[in-house]
Image 1 (tube, rainbow, N blue to C red):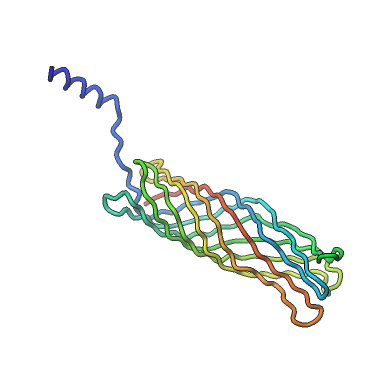
Image 2 (image 1 turned 135 degrees about the vertical axis):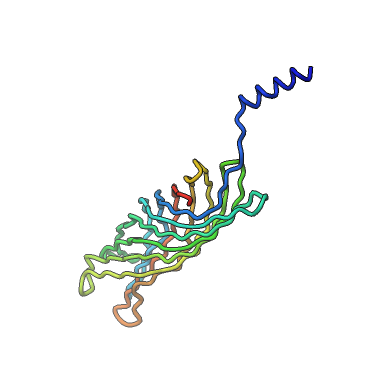
Length: 224
């Protein structure tokens, strides 16, 4: 009887692969790409009134990242740090109209790039998957291009401004091989407002941008 049980155990162990927990620690570099949804508002004001234009646009994003992950002993907890650089194709074009007024011009709000760093904390939920949350801080470069301005000289103006944001997010990382990982990630930058122009004397023109973004990215990384 014992002999038959031993043979059955041997056959079963040969047929069923033995999964070992992957190592998630180490330094890594990679690239990322995905989509970004821009919400928020652009507020235009003059000496008579103000108007609020909603920023609704969707575009691509892409960039590069580098970081380091460390495993916390046998707890299956993973912590890490990451630096990144991202560009986007966002450039919605909006009319400049105060409430009750006529068209005064147009503005194109362009998010050119972001550079930042984040702390990651997660846990391995199976031998090849880590679920994690992240908290980052970034500096973003925006450009506001104003054109066809009816009551201003010159009738076109460009402002390049930077703003900062705390960037919470979450993701799932999958270990494809010993050196290659992929991750799906959501990020929600909480930007400070951008004020390209706030006149204190006539003609009292004001431009204020309050960007709100939602990003979804796919990351491919190589550990070394």
